[in-house]
Length: 221
Image 1: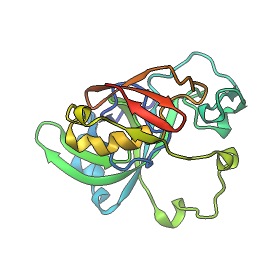
Image 2: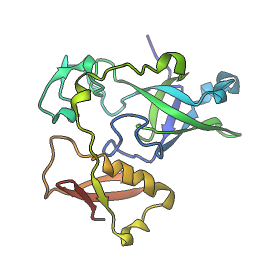
Image 3: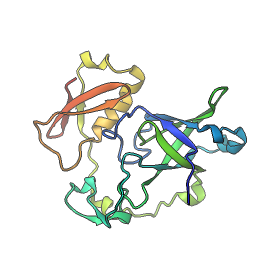
Image 4: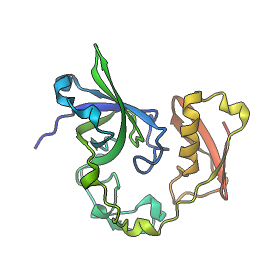
């Protein structure tokens, strides 16, 4: 079976580092879904604006491999414990497919690119190929009694983020709230906790460099 790329999403993440581990964790993170020319038919999204959330089926385009492993090391477990690949959301899968639930903010109709979907709560890298879009259905997709397996035992404490006032002006003002939440959730791999290490990633066209000591994350530049 061959899959067509129906769209690409544009976000503030030029690389994988710093992207939230799951969709919906940071509502301030936005994206724009632009359909490929073949699928720029407004009839294809008729009725979509009536839904608040969407499922995106997409490709881990930076994690394509020729082989696969039945077990992986989830970063949330410190990179040491192994779990079955189908018990995780690891990008290293037999088929590199991802699934995200995002909020539909609005639909913009343009002459050059057709309908553009503006979404919130994204966890995708800029340029990620999208294979399908489906509406989120609360009456069946929401399962309040669901359990989260080994993830239920993981702590979700936030870091205290310190950004000097002199550096806040270097970040677009409409991106600052999202940056705080990205850093609060500790973007470091769980197996890298060296206090002396300086980490860096690109966000909204700005290189963010930071250090973490105990529970305090300090932005250096």
